[in-house]
Length: 135
Image (cartoon, rainbow, N blue to C red; front, side, top):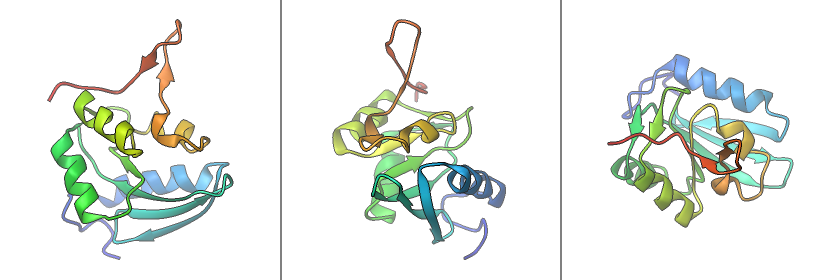
């Protein structure tokens, strides 16, 4: 483990923040950190999930594909803090592929669900709210 020295430029404080989210989550039973930014977790729902931590202000489809190629078996891509987001193209690709794409305000809700990749917050009328940004 290199603690923040990785090809994706994710720093140790960012990695530690995600680890804190996972360690304290009521649905996460175990967490194993590998390859600096990869977290293999087991949930109380019986899922075994691979979460990859990146730090992208706007995560586009190219970055999603790079993560999936670099970390085979990825189930969830965590883009970083609340200020980070993703393009709608990247989100739609991930939903269609059964892959979660979330920032820090979304990942906790997703981990309570079997269909975690479909999780989204809702507005007052019940419409989906995504953390999208233009590329």
